[in-house]
Image (tube, rainbow, N blue to C red; front, side):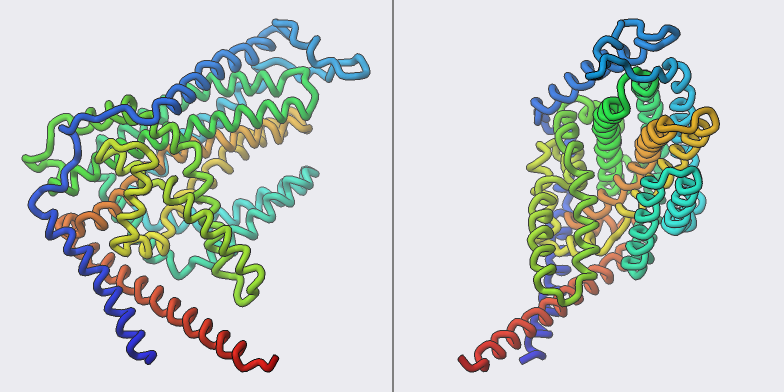
Length: 501
């Protein structure tokens, strides 16, 4: 009985791979092409309007907050609104220009780190990724010690917990890192063969840096304001959420541009191929900042949070063991998040770039494609997104530390935490803009492998064989897990039937 189940599961896994290859045979006549000549339509226009309205309103608010204490204390007489119930006002924290240079340092360090990582990845991708994975735990622990030493107990505990969680996560996925590093190496190889997409990343980093100039001007005005501590923190939280959304929009815009280019290169067999359409980069850029921009704004609100939650729940689910009550609760959350992933996943941006669909439809189509071909098992095993997030976090921590240390030298109070934490977010956004080109290549490779595996075979035959072997192993692993669950359920049913009433 077990042998028959084993053979059926193994044959099912092989059938999934054969079906995947079969798709490539059906599409091998050139039907799979980038929709550059198909008329595209505007999608998710409501979210485009929301984002632009938020951006214009925020720009005005940032300018007012910064100017209020720029070269003159309380230029717009806002202090009358900060009077507390006792009739007194808060302590003055200086002028905008006292803090603006510290944010400027954060923006400069983040930009340099982003550019440096892209350059170093081209020469030593494998080593740089391994360093990022392992050094993040050490860096979090060191920052925790520094926080305790400077008597910031809460932040010390926070960074210590972060170091412990990072260490546990690396230990839990250590067996996946070789395959992850292989995929990242190939993605870097693809990106470095397209210098134009590297220039796009640099250009968007400069755009983000210009916006951060205004954003940090307003944030410096908040830190210098006469508002009480809680009020300043709430304002900074609102500004940080806005910066996170803006940074995610720019990152995902680069994602769409790079995905379109990578897909084109794989379809046509190289960027120098005669069939390669002219001005493909400019077309991809134009679509991403016009008709597809609403979908990018919409998806940027949710994808990052849902992806992070999915990683955490997967890690927790694999470590629970046989605690049935806790496993039941985690399984409920897991299935809820998996449902959300169908509507909000990073692979949607590839479909947006290739076919010009709306975000939700792109996300559903991408997920159904992975489910039908079995490639989802490979994606679940891959940790490239988490590794790139570690690089982003490390860049943000270094940026926040630089600005925080400078602030600590000048003032040893709550302003250190305010400047350091907001500068950390600035660094994460800037380094994330550099890392997104690699992530775009990874997602495009998986989409191409699911739609037409022979595209990957034509590009790199050895890598194609490695992907196919890994996919077969993951499908076999899932089959064996399914058999274990089935056997355990039968045993539980048998025990319950034999229990006397």
